[in-house]
Length: 633
View 1: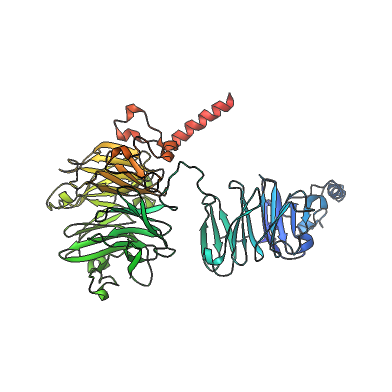
View 2: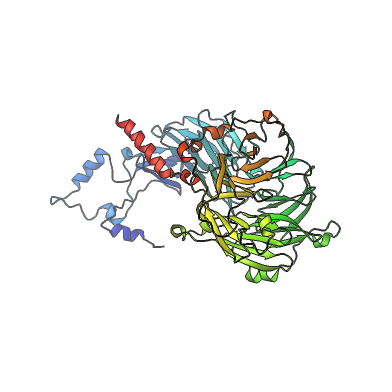
């Protein structure tokens, strides 16, 4: 990075340099506010605790008159001008506003919208000021147990955020000055000496730097809309149906596991802190359905008796604790395994023997092919096709098919690079795979036997046996949104794909890509919006002819296979899944009904799914043109 010294700046003809002498002690904070074109600075020196001053030359009339007298007859300013020597100037009294605060100011925050200035310091009191009236504060907020280190006014949220040197975080109401929330270090988990804070308004998160960086996601208020129903307080990462007990199990980012009754939607049990403070990333069941297996960002797999929330075992890969991205339970020739993949880029197989505990804690030795020719990037997905095929996909777009009996690589597939997105490595990530199991059973078949998601919201069909290759690709999503989940029916007759906009699309694939490459997409049977945010998991419960979905929007929902809305887990009214009269249909979730992106397209375009592609930038442009036209009127 280039270094520019102040001595060089002073000599530059293109830079106006003014050095102000403002405080008599260390400057603790400094901000420039372009909206009012001033510099606000703070110090622990009580007489000049906070100063609001002009940035450029003086605006004071008397001071300007004095400068005019200093100009020589030929119009040149005398050589001994203070600025040219780099000596600090003192602002005229009319060019600055000085606030005197007991024990000085350590931190401040200014909000032009509310004409509000906040100061805090060693005396642990947050003072509220009118920035043009320095004599007396308009209010005081007291309750911090230590000196105030950081302040921020969030005008849109009508909140004030403060933090003290003992790592206590507080949230205040901007209007009535009440303390709404307080978190001590034990609650927030922030340890070490506080060095910096920053509030991210877009994320509604407070970033705190000590000996590590902590991000506190702040949920300002409870959902005020009574129409909204949620299953979890945090985004739902995954959900699965347990046919042994007739339960639905869902996991959230907050490391909370909930167990629901599938037939009625009733909450049966929940347990928190399943992976400590780490997020749960995946879940599966053993072959009996009696044990739940979860993977997390802490690099651990945990085996649960999920009916009572008891953790039976914790499995670890190594000391590095690489994040687990996906897991599956495999039964192969009387042997049972838990397979986990993630950021360590290896296939970790844990031998599941209820009687032999010593072989259970650590993964089996890795396959030689995996170590030498395996993935070079983080593995995102793993799926099995009985009896012996395993497929894994990674962040760089690579898909590998494995022979589980020999541990050898069967074939390797590479996701195509799209021209104008070739420089974006994220665009190639493959996070979802699904085998077409009836086709994969015919090893010599030319038909596509694997489906994956791909770049720009595409769905890709792969042939594995008669030359591993891509034989079909199409984009179902309305806005080319990334495909986030794929499931197929048992007989491989119908495929359901979901995207990051919350849409679910149903395709007839019974005769699709059977004889080789396809140029057209399969027939779209149905599509509907299931969630207002990204769908995180889909599961078909074919015996009952329903579809289970979960989403980042904190909900888990049931649908008929035709897209009829049955209900959201967590709603007050219970349903009977076998009695359609108890379903929510023909109603749809309230937030979907109100979301602008749910607006239907013209009926004439509905026959061709490819015509449903919407250019959101064009929509925005039209809206702007209409609004500007209204202003003109």
